[in-house]
Image 1 (cartoon, rainbow over the protein chains, first blue to last red):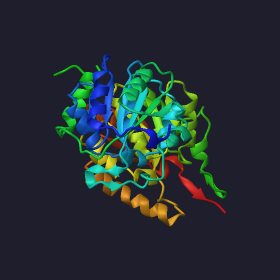
Image 2: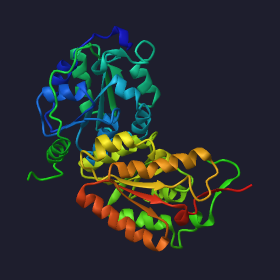
Image 3: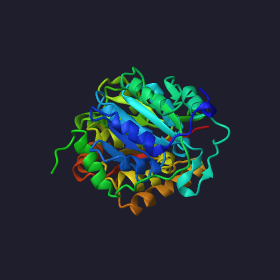
Length: 198
Length: 188
């Protein structure tokens, strides 16, 4: 499906819809900036991890979690600008084929947080075509909110990694993540059952 | 990676039956339950990478960039699995952002093995320059790092440094010097 036939949705709304569907303590990695701001605003969960830097590494971090805990579904939320920084990660994921990894790309074609400058890909590249070309055949544009929820549901039982691209508007994130890296990491490890609470 | 006219020294490619630097590294990783090994390849690291691939204890795979590998082992650590990243000096030079914004502030015991190029017989000026950026970057973040030059010190340094990284939740860089590995030389 071509991106131009898809509805323009909203990051916070899509993130909230995703969180509402999580019933099995699925891990969620929020990429830098608005992506993790909206994840925070959708309601903190112990299985959420918020990136405060390292732009482009939401998918690699999620891949690491997925390889460590193959029985847990791991979601990663990433912006289109961030993904452009680390396109090679798509091939790494395609070659390892972790079926429990679900990648969500929030594509507004701009660096919203720095002043809404267009990305170099904005008018020329198609994220899903890039993903498919990188070896991630289970990649699709969400046509609308209902289609997004359907794709999430399908990813829950997929036998290969999934990538869902969502065309979103230019709105900023709704909340602001509490910027305490050690607390974020420690809570996440509690949430994944790796650590006992103090 | 291979370029005509370059070769690794005999020390770096000796058989599995003898004590070799790469054999010690592999056994030290295993003893410390480090099983996830993403890497960006380097000629000197070839025997280590080959033996890691051959050992089913390890999940060994190439990544497109070194910071991607750092992201992967950081995620794995939080999920309860230990990893280490293998790279060359020039690859380390791409890591300042991810070290300063992920590994250090989140207190992740990132274990890095860096094959040192750019010194003791380097023939590529760019490699020798990029090598000089490595220790200042490590020192600017007050990161633990050791340059390993002797086979008889390798196991002690690697084993103790891995344990220290895990218990203090701090990254460590283990720099494999040409005195240990033989390095990469240019022969006409």
